[in-house]
Amino acid sequence: MCDTTEIAVDEDHLVKVWGIMYEFMMKNNLCDVEVQADGQKFWYHSIVLASSSEHLNIEFTEGQKNEQIKQINIPDKNVVAVQRVFEFCYTGKIELKKDSVKDILSVANFIRLRPVIKVCFRFMLNTINLENCLSLFELGKLHSYELLETKASEFIGLHFKEVSRSANFLTLDIIILRNLIEMDNIGVNSENEIFAAVKRWIQYDNDNRKQHIESLMELVRLALLPLQYLFNEVQPFCSGSLKCQQLILEAIQWQTIPTKRAQLSYRRTRPRFPLKTIMIAGGWNGTTTQTIEIYNVSTGTWKKYAETRIDRNGSGVGLMGDELMFIGGKHDAVNIVESINLITGKKTTLQPLQNARVFPTVIGKDDKFYVFGGSSTASLTGRIVMDSVEIWNSITKIWSYGTPMITGRYGCGGALLGNEFFVVGGGTHKAMDVVEAYCFATGKWRQCASMITKRCVPGVATLNGYLYAVGGIASFDPTDQRISSVERYDPVTDTWTIISNISSGRYSVGAGALGNDLIVIGGADGSVALSLVELYDVGLNKWKNLESPLIPRELMCVLNVPVSYLDHTLV
Image 1 (cartoon, helix red, strand yellow):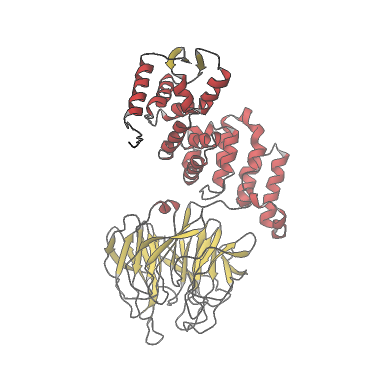
Image 2 (cartoon, one colour):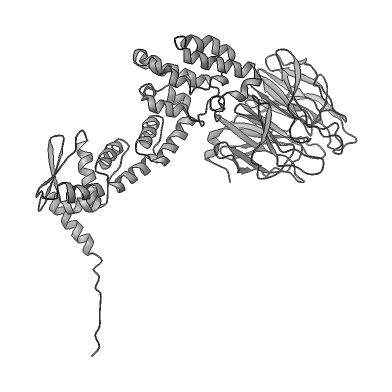
């Protein structure tokens, strides 16, 4: 006879056992642990609690090893939360709600019940809002839960203006406030907003908080504040502190004595991440580029945002609200106008232009879209250069003519500065140094100081009250001289100044503002489209390279869009 061995398994056994243990607990049968909370007593089994919590395991097997009835006192905790957490040890289930999760986490943390702590944090990650972001950031710090701290800090950074005006902000602990304003990823339009927030926090309880002014001002990046703001706002507020006056002097010297910048702490002069980021659309790399890309400032990488499915080289591309507009284009100019909503992805064909054109300069402002100049063809021969201006009214859905440019041309750069749109360079066949400004309020043009260098298809952008012209080419012949110089226009003095060159001569670059820096993207060197990206540090007058976009391109549109666009894509 052969011996046989069989291992019998009852898959329902453990479920039944735990169910019976839960019933015993509910009826106070064979319980040996007394839990006291807010004057009430609850009974549980030490073997169950010790199996669930390493902390209670040590307490019962070492601290209260010889006690027949073991005791746990839980002070200052919500009684219902205490019951729910201890019942989890029997059932493995717990109900979480926005208004109770913090109480449950507090109890779970008290007895080191890791599974409940983990699910509480996971729940909180999905409930971050303006009301709770500060407390969740503080919880993440307190419990060293990095993911919650990071997600909460990202939310605070994105909504800092609203968060800093909340009642919760005014009651923040000094350590948490310091942690917040030290962050790089605070999306503000200027450092003024950081200083104003710190000032409100101090003034909320001035007698007790004025002692912290020096430690907080060390974290405000004073060198990024305008000089007039430093003199009129910061200096009077900090007048009683010698340390703060030294910090203010350092900031003034950083702005007025460039040779001293290398001696100053980069931490106090480093720009914060902006409220807006860069998106690039349109362009050419041997064929029309239909991929829209967006730049993630936090990771320093590009990602695909959408496909335009619009195949027209030489279109004027610009943003009006959430509508990305494509105006004219093609080798033989067309008057087609299409738009793509960057939120919904909806594509719309609009009323055509009154004049077909290629290589116009465009800008969206308020409820209107403006089209300046252009050419009747992309060919080097037989072209008609335009000085006409067309204006699209998004309310009436009608195009109308505006005041013509002083000098007709195409391949210009353009950028908005104040309430004027500056049209820079371009040409007919050879490059021009002409600069004109269009006033939206009056609909009139004025002639500005000419550039130092004549430029066709330069990259043009505005940053901190100045206008920049980058690169370009001496004519529309791609074999002609490619330009590496960069110049800056001061509208107050009506003068141009040469600044540091980009790394190589190229034309048809995209240019824009990324926070407090100037970004220059792509372009062409006469043979191929490029993927090179360079960032200009105004304070150091130096360029550095950034991550290349996914697709090399020239003649692209560079857009400033809210960083919230990073949260979704249309692909």
